[in-house]
Image 1 (spheres, one colour):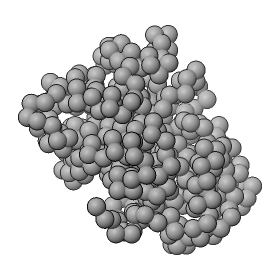
Image 2 (cartoon, rainbow, N blue to C red; image 1 turned 45 degrees about the vertical axis):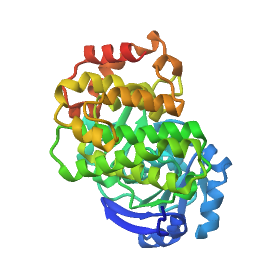
Image 3 (spheres, rainbow, N blue to C red; image 1 turned 135 degrees about the horizontal axis):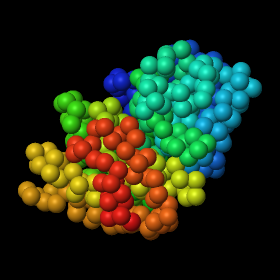
Image 4 (cartoon, helix red, strand yellow; image 1 turned 60 degrees about the vertical axis):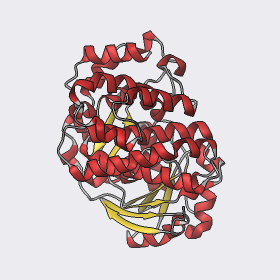
Length: 379
């Protein structure tokens, strides 16, 4: 397969997609009117040399805030805001996986909107409080999974441990530069886990009861690409073809989840906010997805044939078991306990999941007791 160098796509935002897209960062900052950008990232991205790659592609040396934790926090957002003001910046480049990109969105919001971030959480009715009067964010993903580069949400953990979604069309980055070359050095385990995040986005979006045929079509295309290429990308990380397909699958997952997600994310959000553990979001989704598919089975019968076709499964195949097999092939854990979770960690998670913004679009009505049963089944 041969991919032409870079394609301009406009869907929700400007997307420069293809090998070498990072070289257009200076141009995109100029289009956004940014003259003093800062980079928001994490120490792993810096250590991998990716900041240097972006700067060498024409951006030049810029202030770099590398204090993004594994799951972005309000504390980190305030620290990033102080860095933004200290250096007199007028725009932000979110460089990394979903966490740095979400943190970049949060810093941009706080630059012009009074805190705390809880004020803007969707479940608190905060969406109308968010305006477009905020510094531009340009997203440069270095993983293929979250879709945050085109997402309207920033998931941020507050000081009390709640992980809330700050959601608005104004939170979508001004542009996304999706360069699969930046993912070539991603370790196998992280490739698999972030890839399963994209798979989950596509499946949950397609099963959402909201009416949005364009999102459905994008979800199925993204799912097909991911299932076809995720094992190859994990086992042969130097394959630019596989990396490109996974980056497109992740991008499409982000494009389509405007339709809403479901109970997998309802659970993974509060689990990801646990202070006692550092739980990877994509891995949580991979482990939780089979149990949620089984729970939703009575409500999704009419949608399963299309899922099976996208996943290249036979007629009547068990989609949940196919996900179990895919996780096994990728070397991902099959239980939450394998991630370090214990029964004592789960107190209150079902209630928190019920309040999560993703719960509203689960295809089958769900309550806290149902969530507790799903946790027990997945533990």
